Length: 259
Length: 337
Image 1 (cartoon, each protein chain N blue to C red):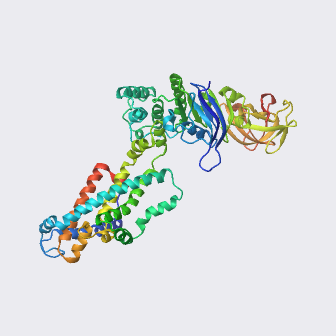
Image 2 (tube, each protein chain N blue to C red):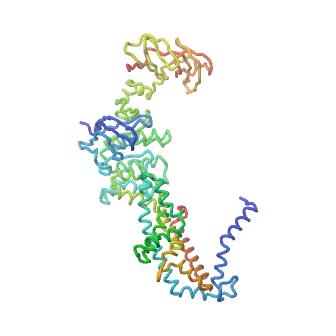
Image 3 (tube, each protein chain N blue to C red):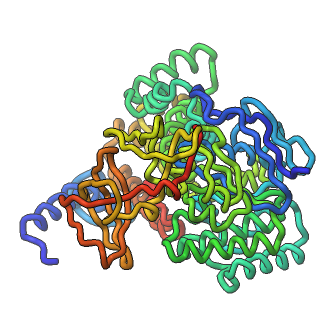
């Protein structure tokens, strides 16, 4: 079908708006200069190499990865059973439960971070890593519940009854019939939660502490102190990393239909 | 001795009032019995209770001499074929059928043999590696049946298994179900709202209404001698009228009709038993439908609406015209309540 000129112009404008900033960051990341500038005075890989060698970034990347994976797995272990219970035997006060489970998506994450800091970390003197982990789990669980719940709501209950009449226990029914059919949603929830954790700033801001920092927080700190192109270089690397990750999983699993 | 026995069974959902009350039913081994009734009559609820998918509020169920009232559904050895087929979408035909045998830890060689045998029996040999989504409704129905019978259940329950198929396939599958039931000697409880289906397949039929059994009889008895107005109406006696003091009482008024035996409270006629174009009564044609050999009429009469029939060659009356009709006393179905 032949498209009109106007929709095409809008399309290109939106693409430019969305991708333009990244192009600037991308080019700045390959800068050969000393400060963050656009267009860069010259091009080189020196900041890319510098970022890859910087100890504090590597450590923060490791922490982010660790927190992200652990928090995501715990959020799924909590979220999948909750979603299952909600979809199959709606408890009394279902509407309230749904609201509570959505509230972390509505309440500013800043407040969650501050609250956790004052009432968990300071009050019980929890270690920094644990505080971070708890904060992230609390943040990610609603995502896990939401994504898995919507998939479960579309899964017919009668196939579970069929499994039971064929001799399956409740646990076997869940493992042999339910789980294989919501597999895609669980994987989608995993990626969504992990990316959310990995990019998390507000909650982490309050909960990171001496010696332990996540990558976004480390980047924020670095930017406050120095204005060199290393942040642009790091961002470029992260975007490429994420793109490769998403393309790969999409190719292997086709998860976009669950998002 | 009865093989399946329901005694004073009471059922309901949640806090709602009971859906089924005081239900007694006995089924012999190898019998095919239908639960027939309109939607909401409690037939599916009863079936689900036998399978153990809903709990009894009262009464008991025994199967093969054992009280199964409190037995969990996965221990009952009762096969269930769902109206929606309920095939496992992530498993192919072979694995769907093998599901119950795998849970029973049947050795691989025996499993393969039994699964293939059943798949062949339902006419799906060669389809083993297909996924349910790649099959037609009729084929999925066969898979559901194969999956339920391969475990050699003590009892096979079918919940309107043919209602999602087109008319031609439905008739074909009826005969096939009956054949498989006979060959395996399996005791079958068949839930349907389609009286033709129930009449064609069953050894006996249970007509249910409002959570109670209206009549339990052979297809012939049920068709020819229904005992209640509800069953009569369900079996095609669409012209049903109260009878008092030598008069028929309809919704609109009365017509004299002598000579019905004393004690008759209700008289009924099938559409085919009401000739249109001759007779002592008269009505106005509301609509007519051409059926080939015959024409079916809906008449507005002093009694209310009456359905009748005339041979196509004599059916000259059109909508809005007055026409004669008869309610032959000798052919009437007579009910005393």
